[in-house]
Image (cartoon, rainbow over all chains, first blue to last red; front, side, top):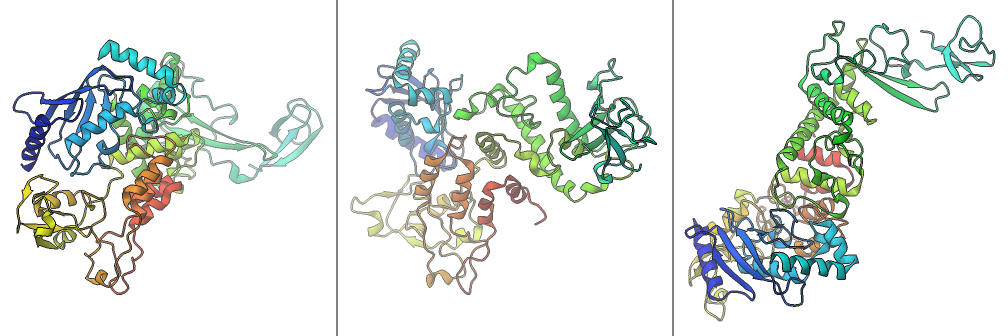
Length: 151
Length: 416
């Protein structure tokens, strides 16, 4: 299928010139559908100095279906589910927002950008979103604490 | 039954009228004859019970078996009473778990299903341990409240939802399946509702359950979302289970895809850098390769764009529809006016959304935008003579924003 070709190509591009703060590799050699991403917490965010392990899975229908992104490293963030899945599902990652012309590089940059600028109105963790909106210092404190502990 | 009773103002009791006008209860003569309109008393199955006011407790005689045992096709009765002055009204339902030969109810699957639902509600009611946070926001909605996983109760007003499948999803799917069945069955039931109210008594469990929940026995069951958030969630869940991309653009028709113009890549398309790629397969496209061009001028390999258009009738790049020049050649003279780009309308709707769903925005508003802002798709599209969109059915889907039942009708295919 053409998808493997495209994925390989994207992987090659990403390994050669990775976006800032992001390194990619295959989770397992020979399986192009599952990627292991190391993401540095962006500067100026409470996640700074943290190193987050992110799993990116590509559906076999890629690029016609969006990849799924999940944080293996626990993270305190309104847009990442606070469970063992650590799912992030918004914006371009949603099936109905996805465009096949979006690249994985863009997905990863989008995910990292989200660490700097959470989208509390699109939150999966309502409580964290509330806190982010109403009590920013406390949110940052907890996020920093979690980053120190887990990332 | 003559329908005449007396209301005693001394003890405030309504009793059957005796030969005189004295209250049989307190023997006061401060009474008034009241007429109870016949239709307020639904016909009862053989007035075997002496006191219709006192027989509404299913537990009365069945302590040894408990109400759990009504799982097996229980006979049921349902009555409505109105106070003499008409100011209040109440319904009672009796479920009898003992084997009953006077009513030979054939177990219908819908009834069984509903009763199982009720069963689980009652079951968990009986066990206070199991329902610590039951009442929050949801009322007694049988479709959602009985065995739902905790996430349904957590934070739903602030937007918490299952972003991805979790362990609890099986339960959720089962519930939704139940719901679908109920709704579908509801359609079938609608026409036949009154048939069951005959001299044999209303044996229709659908009515019984509805009455228990104080809701009319129609599709309004599904409206039992007690907040906007719940309502949204309900809708999105249904849409998700009914097609994984819910609000996404519908597929393009095969003919619309084939009708797209093809073109050999020329120097202009390749651009000054001299290399262009199909943004779906990301292959570099050489000069003179044949590609398919969409009305928005974005172009792709035919195979690539075909695969996408079979799922969604929009440009993978800019999301514009592809239907402009596919209808009977009339649009060359009557170009379709392109409304706001779908992207901007999406953004707007997501900004307005009071809360977010898995799809991240208010389902209702996005349905409106998603369907009514799109040009009419090719299959339904234009009147060849005028180029005007004919009374397209698709936009009407979105119009039912206020009424979940109309959405269901469309979605689940009513007779209309």
